[in-house]
Amino acid sequence: MSERRWYIDWYLISAVLFMSVFGLIMVYSASFVEGYQVYDDPMHFLKRHLVWLILGGTAFLFMMFFPYRHFKKFILYILAACLLLLTLVVIPGVGHTVNGATRWIAIGGFTLQPSEFVKLGMIIYLAYIYSKKRSYINDFKQGLAPPLVIVFLVFLLIMLQPDLGTATAIVMVAGLLAFFTGARYWHLFALGSLAGAGLWFYASTEEYRMNRITGFMNAFELQQTEGFQLVQSYIAIAHGGLTGAGFGRSVQKLFYLPEAHTDFILAIVSEELGVLGILAALGVMAFIICRGIVIGARCQDDFGSLLAFGISCQLAVQVVFNGGAVSGVLPITGIPFPFLSYGGSSLLITLTALGILANISRRTEKDRIHRSEKGSQEYNSPEGVSTPRREAGISR
Image (cartoon, rainbow, N blue to C red):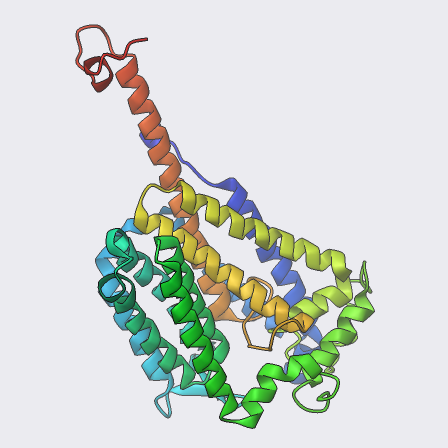
């Protein structure tokens, strides 16, 4: 009977549904003015976001029932696809450039951002590799270091676009996965210090890079240049107050705040729905992330456990980076907020990753119930039938 049951994580699914609908509503509210002015269609961005939401929802359902352990069979293909996609982006004539950055590939009127796919691909790759190396992860040369060579190569390819935010996020998730695998703290500290020093050296070689990283600390002094976007975000947050100005009543989205429906959509949420709206979005995302950590902790399979941790960490990094940029706590990195920011590749990969997480939860629960039922059958087996419990001398 148990094999025919469906074990579905309704807690996770309910949170995903809420964020999907909330994101659809807020993308429309933040973008209808630009859609009307630029494309003569106030629903331009809503329609495109809805297409990606349907595709992402389909991917979520597929991944929820596709056994995650099968990814092990395709790990080399996944890694090769990641490197190929990142290479295609930097080839002249193939990559699509926006605002000086070549991060997209244009296909049939839509654009794909390969680095979003690489985020998930690297999580799958690292979860697989580190699950095999868990017993000797403390050996730096044989255990921890080899997969990081691939991470470094991916980092370099993404930096050619350039996309410092995404590259940094992938490195951070790689470090967190190494932490969950059980790597030595001083190894992680040394690698983290080396990465931080490299990042600072890279930023210091060009004044505009340093201003981009440090501009959030003196935004009002640079409000005509690097600080302009952050100052406009402050104005939106201040206008919203506790309860907001009302849905659809944002002023900053009237071409005052750049990227109002993408990277800075949280500022529009704050302006229209207030601090309470922000807390609702952050609260549900925190629930999804914590649920992922719990799923990873309960999973008895090392690969599934690290995969759940990696997906949860990636979401957490995106929430922290985006929320920190909008509020002026962190530099502006261009990292989208999951579900809310307009962007098809990000939404598709977020829902795909959460479908995998739902599958891990489903598989873990089925395994737990199977072990429980098997133990119960052994315990209640009739007299004369040999069971491990009876052989060990355990009786009721």
